[in-house]
Image (cartoon, rainbow, N blue to C red; front, side, top):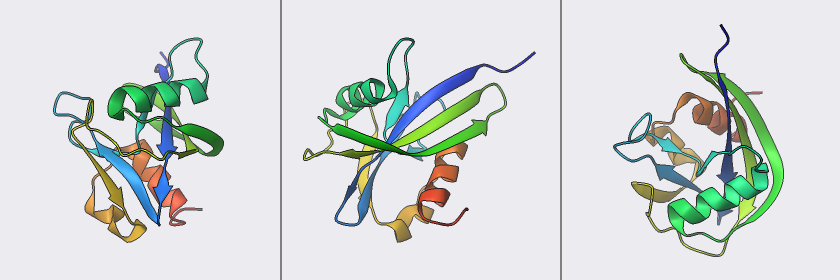
Length: 131
């Protein structure tokens, strides 16, 4: 039996050489881990619409979604995630509405945060640690 596939979109939001990351809540799947902000794509929804919706719901951010910069497929024990990262810009500051914390992090600080598998693979690729 094949595992379910989940499509997840995430934002690479960079400002002054720092990237926005968020911490999952205590009640989330893989609680308290850090991730690029975003979420699941609902049926019938485009990636761009899903990403704009998730960032509004989670952090009250109005965003402009640009090009796709990365796609990672990651197998978890019970499902497979198609994890797609888009370059996103915003002038806003995140509010912690549906995330535990949000931080602007420089590339040399990423190793201080624990990420889920799909996010970790994305971080590594974006920082040039993985071809």
